[in-house]
Length: 78
Image 1: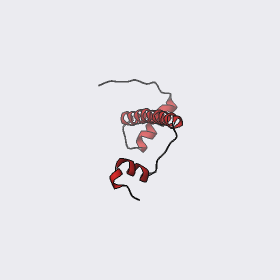
Image 2 (image 1 turned 135 degrees about the horizontal axis):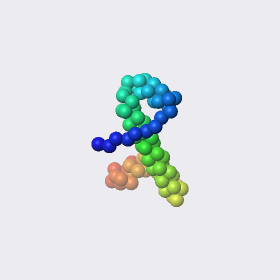
Image 3 (image 1 turned 45 degrees about the horizontal axis):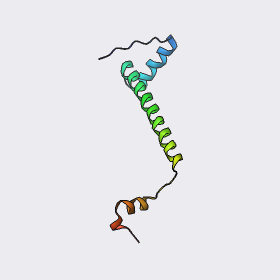
């Protein structure tokens, strides 16, 4: 287990406590949730940026039907 200390102004503390209460969470759980949601959001953005770069290299797309035909050519519809 790890303990992290943060310094908040009086106003920041009030905002954090109000948010936690609105979420029916302890201040600790509220802070952990917000922290990990931010990490996940930034990770998702990085993945999207990487996917966009790949797409820009080769913008070829396939319809659902085309993918189905590629993956199961013996069942391709005419």
